[in-house]
Image (cartoon, rainbow, N blue to C red; front, side, top):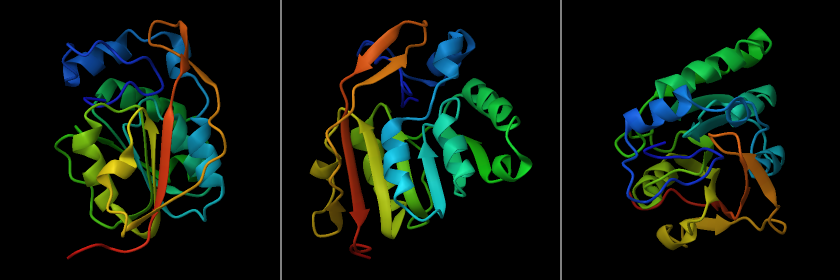
Length: 203
């Protein structure tokens, strides 16, 4: 999260979303903010795909990564916060060994980390900051025929080449209620953008 509020409220714009910010958020997070179901948009889109390699960018405490691994995906789960990843590893350790073994946890700042190009069948990210910086790099990580899913308030189609991407029509957006870091609940006013990469783009 320089990156993300992972299923939580968006902090004030004048705050600095560095690693220390997110480490503190996760060290002091309310129980409900860590123990929650995976984002319903992720489960809806992924349920229609054949499991392959997935990147969960800004994975937080790992609910989406763990859910994907349960479905048979090989998941790379990246977050800026080592505390968040500690929580995620602990949750994954409760899963069967074959599920936990499908997830690779990695600490990195998405604004500077470069995902391997064309490597993933599914790239998803939920509630990350600096999306205008991050989305082009995440899009490049999707292989031709793969899917990019961004859940936030940001129009990813505005930064994607329409010759390279085909939007996925989604049903009417759901009313999602999530716990914030302080344990209160917030109704999320999401924009959900999903697209399939139909070509590899220019070399």
